[in-house]
Amino acid sequence: MKSDLQLQRDVMDELAFEPSVDAADIGVSVTDGVVTLNGFTKSYAEKLAAENAARRVAGVKAIAEEIKVRFASDPKTADSEIAKRIIDLFSWDVTVPDDKIKVKVEHGWVTLTGTVDWYFQRDAARHAAAKINGVVGVSNLLEIRRQPATSDVRDRIVSAIKRSADVDAASITVTAADGTVRLGGRVKGWHERDAAERAAWAAPGVVKVEDNIVIAA
Image (cartoon, rainbow, N blue to C red; front, side, top):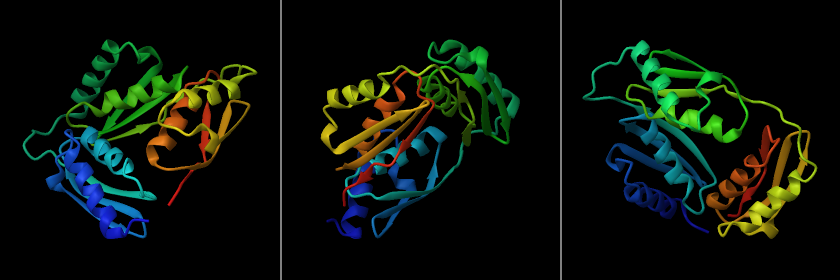
């Protein structure tokens, strides 16, 4: 089991290794396996990249993310201009159903509302909005339209997990009912947990995933 000091060093090394993150502006502290990230990033997308980098490190039990987005050299961008750029980006992105999404921007904070058919569309909209300069955060309130769940939704998810080279399928349990998938078991790292969750969201008819998978210490 890693000490907090070793875990801190590993997280700092992973941040330094991640090309989309300027690790010089990010501080890392660790207490009982819980990693706290603080400091500043130049964009919301960089902030998400820093969190994902920390999550990849083996031994991380949880993340307290206190990073602020700061635009040191960029001029202030009007909310109306941010909204227009997001709408334009949605219209170019084939994975985003722009006709089903409403965009609201207030002091740089984006709120997305509406209903989409698939989780990947919800996720793609959030990632697209985060790319726009001037965005300091995104509240993704998009709902997933409930579709008739197929009788073999659990089998599809289990098969997808088994196909993944990153996951030990035998260590994960899957139950599905009324559009809700529940994942359980124990895995070795965050990458396995994330891979299992992605497999669950990819199944037709899934509107909610309860991820109760535990990261082994």
